[in-house]
Length: 473
Image 1 (cartoon, rainbow, N blue to C red):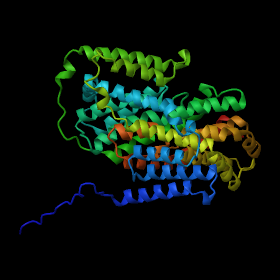
Image 2: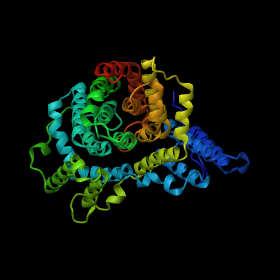
Image 3: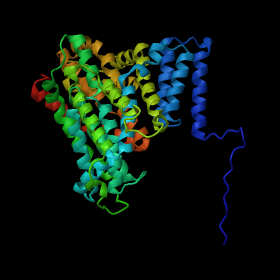
Image 4: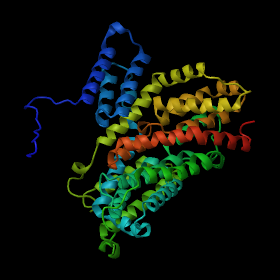
């Protein structure tokens, strides 16, 4: 029997072909724009901010539009509706996170162009062999170890992505395979999630230090912070990730592992050149507390060096090969948090939540859960770096309600902003999705599962650990 031939109709020239989800996204954008521009509704700054923030969160979560396009929609509506001053709306472009993304994109391109990523992968692959679980454990441990050496989570992610991609290729996991996603996610989550328990290993931690020092006059000490948080929020979470990744992404390599000539040959001039540059960058990233140069500008110095004509580290027309979508995406997310904070939306959400929640000295376990949950809720609205600026000014009222020292109350924020519920809250995960060939659904599912385990298992264990250490009487 002859097979039916299906034809795919294409829109006529100048026509439009909008999918149902894109149609819903367009309708949501039009409705939001109308609400912002209609004077009859009488929306104040808070109401306008709530509309654009909820629209941004909704579109980034559902994926109805490309992430970079959602960012441009957010910028446009904020300016059209006069939601905030331009300095606040475009605060993301002044953020170090955004420039780290650009620097990381350049560094990643240089690693691929020179072949350094493939060489490193060819050296690592034989030690891992054909075992997917061994690959997951190895790259997770490597990512965790890098957390102590490099303070910038974005810098670590951008350094790891090309190496992990080359390693996945070398192990026989091609683009789009489950095994490739598992290997890359093991390295990225291994270097990102435990970092919340280490000072100063990411932006939320750094913001937390500054906010607490401003409120209480002294910042948390490195060892004090590490002892309180790392055993469970760092090490235990890293261990929990391993069986999750192995179960969710277990895969069979597509091809046999073979020795590559590249592993036995001498390093080329560009490879040696880039290795020296990256070694200097890692040294500067690791000693930023001493020299005071932020990680973003170290990364940009490296990027400029790589892009400089005659360096031999990039191909022809390197800007044409760069992907700028992640830059707009991260800038949009940071700006969303800035708008929510500047408009008072984050503080209003926190105050509203507190009015419905129970805090009392005679119920310390309940107060512990409430404060951690409040931080997690605020993180959904203002993203993770926005949690300390919103909640730290409330330390003294919260301390009076719980009967705890203000520093104990402050430390509960860490439980909240270390619980990543959705990827858009964390710019490094966003970049991993954009440049690592990962599916947003896979990353979202892993975030939701780890968040549920954190709330149901790690938070109660943390309460017991804090009580044992004497932080909760």
